[in-house]
Amino acid sequence: MNKNIFLSVWLVFLAIGFVCNSLDAQHVNDFSLENTDNELVSLEEIQGEKLTIIDFWATWCKPCTKAMPKLNDIYNDYKDQGLAVIGISCDGPRSIGKVNLVAQSMNIDYDILKDIDCEVMGENNFQAFPTLIILDSNHEIVYVHEGFTSGDEKLIEEEIISLLQ
Image (tube, rainbow, N blue to C red; front, top):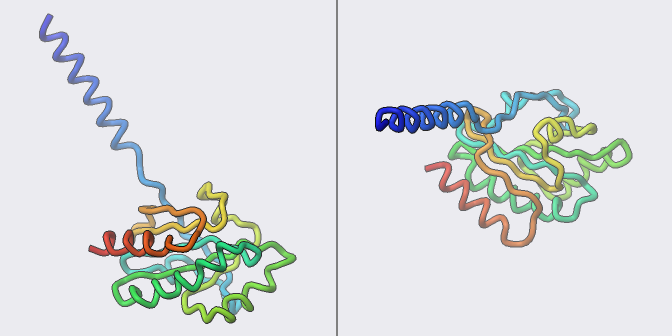
């Protein structure tokens, strides 16, 4: 009887191990979008050596435009440590023409890409603006932050520091 209990418990732990190993972190597939110069670029071409922040935003989203200068500061502080920041505008046909103006008026140094159909955001099941994700060098999502209020940049920076170590 004890052997049967031991065998049953062992099989349960083995099954749990298989399930846990089959659960992969969410992964972002490579994609190509136009930048503000209307050049097609891929994630592979502009990703960071260690980490890549992707910020999904829109010109009409006030929290998005409040976050952008803070992300620009983070980018400039950590780009030499292997961090890239990519802003992906999900503006539609009526507002896509404002993307370059917004980025230029804020002196944004990181790459801004345009995704009129919000395909990249949709493929990864994100719906809120802004949504910021941090990818490791294998394109696995290691951090997600939705929305933006003053002070959130400190949380994001703390996460970057811990991930760069």
